[in-house]
Image 1 (cartoon, rainbow, N blue to C red):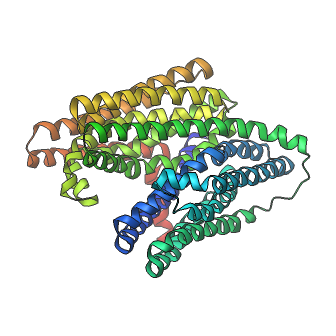
Image 2: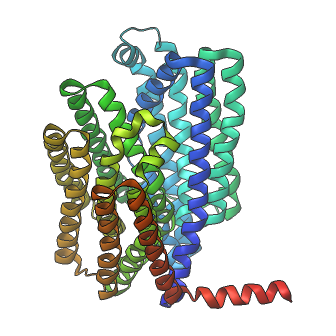
Image 3: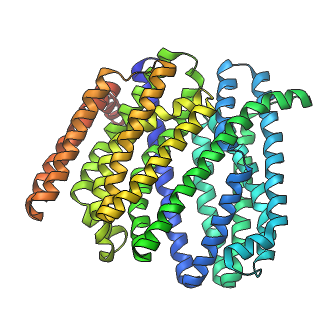
Length: 494
């Protein structure tokens, strides 16, 4: 695949799944609004605690197969041998049944303890036992989506995601309306059933021939999936644990209001800017897995992905840096204005996150589970310490500053590791691109910091326009956007 074709593939996947992520966010906002209006704060709290507990149990028992198996499916698909694909798929399906049943039984047995620990009583024991089935349903659905992602059936995967989100909302809303708090458990179960049915409907279009796989072959093939997945599960738990600790620290040394502000601030950075990374990773991970054994191709793809991410998020980050206050008011309310400074510092950190994110997938694509785990453990360790120090010294703004410093360190860390182990290095074009986009971002930050609002907005709009123009110019080099636009007009006129 030549460079222009590769860039086109990246942008096509990003636009496709960027749209999916936007729809999912809108559905999530509507669902939260429905729960808030129909169930009130108490109902929202119950729903949140139940789903959080189930999510934690899921991460303990699913062995990260939803991520680790993508590499195996992608590698098998790249061989072009249907028998190889069928063998890996058969093993995966057995593993998701085993891990899903493990989650079901563990939740069912531990239901009284879960109820007591989560709610302080055993009133929700039956609820947890009913909900135990969702761990099996969700794991089976995850197995179907892995097939679509690993074989890069992106349109089918996008349709499954959108349909699952929308139908889940349409079915759960009436349950909340008619049964109020009693509708929470049925709504969660029905949503899981829908997700499984929809993912099965689309994955069955792949026409994978059934194949006999012995127990020994299942153990041999499944070992790498489970090993990598187990490390992913551990790193996920470490991330959740670090997040919990910083929230507990803010609550004890600051206030519950600060916890809410911190959560809201990083929801903006993580969800609305981070959706670009989520959209890109859907296609990027299987593509990188397919070429991971070829250092030259892997280096090329990582650089392309990092450049693309910066070209897309550069103008968005400039806009956030200038109009942070308006973004906060639009998404929340004027009561959340104190998080504006935190968001601006964190926005600068996103430039470095874009680069470190692109490199980080190399460890997954290589199946280097230990390297990935230790890298995540170390980075989460200093992120936690920097968050505590930042909040201690500068309050909410300090959390944004710690985000920036953390991702500078993360980029240096993953770059050093990948260079030493896999001879990775960015292309010169990447360094030029990040220098220009980051410089524009810093200028936006300074404008907002030292100038009156009117001048800040005026100069900020100019800087945003420059960032947009630069991104368009660089995209045109990679994609021939002008030529594509001319051809499109000719087709319409013809």
